Length: 382
Image (cartoon, rainbow, N blue to C red; front, side, top):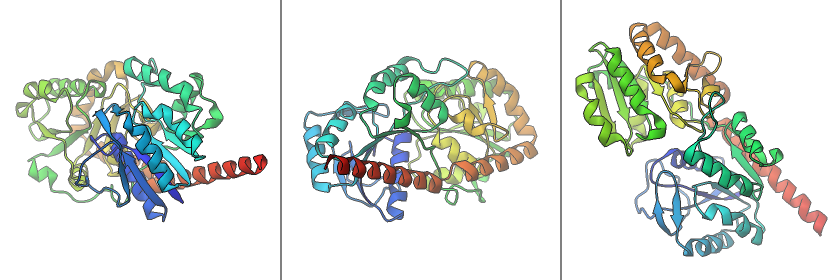
């Protein structure tokens, strides 16, 4: 099958990881993939798929949204006409191009799928607020113009339906990870950081990730000297938080780590993974930590609570994250048997529901279904 994939190559975020992992897996299954993206880097990022690429011109891009040039529509149209894909899959980049893509594909008679990543809160609070609400309100009327929209959980499907997207157009295909690559294994990370117990946060240092609640809880919990918190990632709040939560509290700031093998090594050497976000979609970082056998604590936002439900991890309330963590951190420090048990359950949950192989199989079935529908429609018109 020839697939034109439209997604993100940079700057690093969950959408970049999603595009990289899915396209690599599709290539491994024998599909032909062309990658269209807003990036001009000559060098290939870590583990980037070996496939033809098309760079779409842009004015500005960030981890949140992208502004293309006026020429981008023409470049995209010409590229799709040249590639002649069987199907187009857009991992939506929150760009004005997302709204004209259905029209372009309709003109070229190409079936079109979207993956909608935008995070949301969860069933325990207002589902949406601020930027997320605006994005959902903007996109909902247009998403019916796609042949299918992929979301990551049933709760997100219900939310999209309430906003007006027809339910039959929404497919639930959760994120998945490679459990062979992300697996429990020996690691020298504890020795490297001179730690007896190692806790990890991995993600953006941004308001929606609520990292300060974790940092304050760690500081107030007065953890033992052998316990350390590794903060992996970068973002707009890093420079304002790092000076107040540093090595004197056994907090180690590692910044953004591009090397995937190094990120895996850190997870394999850690005991506990913590994700205190206010909004999420379905966190790949959380799934990666679970697959490596870490005990995981995450807020009940997006689909993360669903992932950790029924004993696969500890689900935190967004309203009381700091208070809960202040109590739980010493507990996980003092009881290794608890982290071992939860880590085993987390790994088992990933193997049951969230493997990349299952994800790709579901995606292939969806592609086939849409192509069959398209052929049926064409035969009726003939």
